[in-house]
Image (cartoon, rainbow, N blue to C red):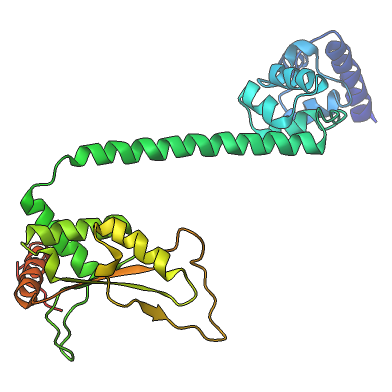
Length: 286
């Protein structure tokens, strides 16, 4: 009974001190209480004085976030303004009413499309600037550089002799006019004159063959009468053409007569290029 009376008396004194604005440490010193558990029981239900509460670092951000939300700002805008996470913004303002949309769905789509168009235009300008800078950095090709460039180009796109089908002759086919022009520059470097060339167009049978021949004649700088009969790609019931339209001109095939020696020079130079990149310096003839 005495123990209960003593606790009630001690609690009465502790509550009085708590309401007077003392901290737990001050109450413990005043009552000579050293047990944290007992101290908590003595002041149970009594709120701590305001001066003992540690201020929260984000209270100012929270209040600012709520102000901005009430003004109609979005989560992304608040996040960018305050430099905090979107999850924090959501936690702070989720009890506030959602702002009314500032534009209709159609206006929102129009703004989005305009933004995408602006972004793509900027990307296109960046691409053009990069290509222009790279083109200017190349400068003028020396004959040696042009020779090696042509060798690599031919090995990638030209016809090659195989162990099971020996064919040491230069024959090149491509659909890119610039590639064709570069290949012709390479042949000129090798001393190949135009009277040694056989030209023909390879194209789908449903395409504009005369138009394609006129196009390639302009690229090469010859009359259409210089072309051999075009090679037509036949169709069947399952043929589906994707390369259609005015920009499709098929491929130009360039055959160099009496070019066995030139072919061997090209092949040897290619193995030499490859050999410089091998650890032992030996060509990898494949």
